Amino acid sequence: MQPSMFNVSVPLPERNEVFLMNTFSDAQLLVTPDVVELLDRLERGAASMDDAERGTLEELASHGFVVATRDQERRDLETFFSDLRESTDQVRLTVLTTLQCNFACDYCIQGDHGDYNKHAAKMSLETAARVADWTESRLDALAPSSFVLTLFGGEPLLNLPVAYYLAERLWTACQARGMSMLVNVITNGLLLTEEVVDRLKPYGLNGIKITLDGDRDTHNRMRPLRGGQGTFDRIVANIRRVAHKTRIAIGGNFDADSVDSYPALLDFLAAEDFAPYISKVAFKPVIRQSQPAAPKGFIPLTAVGGEGKPLNGACMTSAGTGVSRVCDTCNFVDEKMSYLREETKKRGFHTMDGVHMGPCEIHKKHSYTIGPDGALYACPGFAGESQMSVGHIDAAYQARRSHALEQFERLSAWKECHDCAFIPVCAGGCTVAAHNELGDMHAPNCHKSSFEAGLVALARDATRELASA
Ligand code: SF4
Ligand code: SF4
Image (cartoon, rainbow, N blue to C red):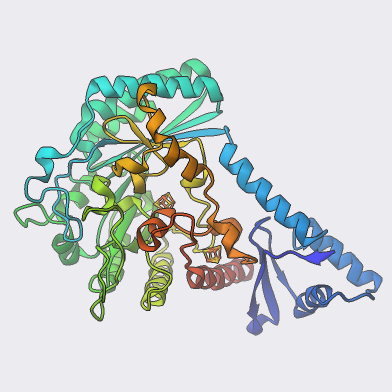
């Protein structure tokens, strides 16, 4: 017997206890320090144990804290990732209905800047019909129990005919096959109306994610219209009108200048009548063009996508943190993420706990992203980068994409993470960020300090829950 390599712990001296978690089994326990000492002795190969200690180890083994051998645990990890990859329980489809956007975000060089929207792709109804045909054939081949459609862009509400068509047609397809279906929308919120919600609700509308980049003034600076007009008040008014009809999730992209305005945004949201309808609040750093030497106070995040086009038209709200592991300000970002998570929780909003962060969609073969022209991508962060397309809804275009597909099928950056205890919840970090910053999608993009901070917060929350029970 050996302690699992995925055990993590946080001492809680004020209670004379230790928070013990296994990231693979997800078991969480509050134990006395002698239990940790027992695990340490096992690690060192202690031969003699009394009956009580053996009983404790058996109990720990039943929760995954003790395993037969590390070799077996490694094999179990391989099986976990391969099962995750091949799982057909749920098929997920993210459709970029358009790459056009009605915002001129400060940190995004597409959207309503210059003549970008004139040339940005938009899905036609004919293509949407072929997307639906393709999806139905996937549903027939894989027979999942559930299907999730996410409408994304650009700004997806700029192409409502395609959004409505796909939701209605795929709902009918799922009903006919006895499968459940959910629809998510990721939008900037400007065109969100009751009509949009009412039209999508019968087809399984699950929730709408809207981006607010800080308090009113900061958001208006970061996410204006082309003429510079602010968008905060209009978005909030739209949320007020629809919040009682569907779940609203709030996202936000922060940088060094804007991060301090987020507590004011949280105060504002907490005071709103629609606060109880907010299902989740989660913020992450802005992705910027990488710079050779970042000025002080600037978070040198890398634009996702090449040729000067962050994300190549996919809205940046999709991508992971994108921070270089060699970057000096990496800790700053991780620290700020932890800070904002705590501020969010203080106001009573649900947020990510900082530990259960993955593995993300890219590790699931049957999570598909489709661009406006029908090209398939491994995740929204690669959408629009044509050489990274892994396929196409039309088989005729398929052959030349097999090289990219092969690249994504063997993704396993976590194998370079040796015995890191966070592998089951991280899987080596964001592949898009690794591809852009390190030039190697197979390399880990590490934010271990962020997981460690999340673990400390999780331990505190678990302790608080116990104390109030
Ligand atoms: S690789 Fe994962 S974390 Fe990164 S953008 Fe894609 S889905 Fe998100
Ligand atoms: S990227 Fe870092 S935190 Fe994630 S599994 Fe690898 S070593 Fe661990």
